[in-house]
Length: 285
Length: 351
Image (cartoon, rainbow over all chains, first blue to last red; front, side, top):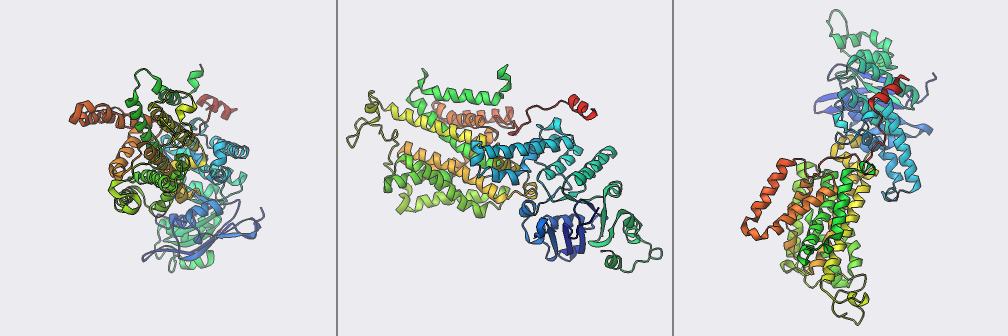
């Protein structure tokens, strides 16, 4: 596969401080189209903070996040409001604890996600009220897309059920489907495999791989489950204490002593890592 | 059978609407009953508007009565100072109420939950205080009297036309009766309620209505899907307020006299009680709740000081029997018509 010259997302020297704590400290990496990029690291490494920066929930003061789209136009995400990041740059996320519209039906969840396209088509709701042709066509397209994703995540039978009544694993898949319905360029998924059993986790892998192959989207994935990460990601970024300690293919990362040290702990004499993170960041990131 | 395919709720709503439309012609109907029904319908209108804000968008508004007052005073003042007719003022009152909602809502709607409730409560009180104290414009506590009564598209309801034209009775060549105006007002507010209900029903299926409900469920998820919470909130707030504006101008036209007394916090509380009691999901629920909350104190007048006891008993009964409200079940507004059963889906997956 030829790698495009400009990555979809370039994160440069991103730093997010909460008082004296640098939750994300001078992190730089790239996300490319058609790839699954995984962000891994121990608890408290700054993975979710990174996501919150990318999707506008936090406003980082230092660093730059550039999303480059077709034709060379770009969005500087650190300057955009959260809903604009989703609407215009089309960076869409899921949440560590699912945030579905629990009282609404599964199908409605997927229709709300297509607000960006449906709302202009309804022309301040006037065209929608009259049921004029072009609104009806937009509505039908939205419905078809919703059904496509319902089928993909295996929730067609539950279409009219309230989203809050679904089993946990189904809620996870619905959240991914909802994010995909909003037509993202970059899909950020926060720990999708958490709390899933082995079979569900494998289904999830298949779903993510299919999203990557069949849809024009880059996937950025936070995951603890190494089985998921190693199987499906093309590219792994490892964070520890807010610092990027490794960046590369799964094989490279697996062999990286800094990563092993971060996950298993280091005995000073066994693995010599002067000022953990700093050196490896220099050469890795 | 075809009846099976129509949701029960729609059927019940239609039945209530038909009953309401034929009410003045029923044998037991008298002027008093139609008057009370008109009052109830005003509250159904207000409940429909507040339900958009509280029930759909999930914004707890305790100062809704302010927009009711804006509607009433708009009509009274425009009619008195500029001689505008009821029919010109009705849309204007709705627009003015919506505009005032936008002005108030812009700074206020960034708040959530209890904080929003307290600030809107404050706004309701401010509106009342302004009405009492701005004597030059509103007439202060004395209110505004002699407000022009609505006519039948240019034909006045009177024994004699003031300017030598034809009255309603003369035009249709029927004997004059003061009942004509009562019935006309009843049908007018009934039409307004039906239109408002149909509008909300349709809007709920459109992206804006789905966004209102999504906002109620989870604002953060809305943001992450590219929905601007501010515009969605403002649209709900303004539309809800415009309904109050329509109801207010109707109220002023019906009474012929308004004063700040009609726009106290008590009114906000009653409207909110109607919305909560209704279950916040359907027009039918609002109609039933309005009948109970407005109708019962009226009908139990003979009990004198014990009538609030009857009222309380009914409330306790509802809370015990229908804790989710009178019609609390939410039906999805966007539905998949042919849901495959588990077997067919499994077969499709296998095949």
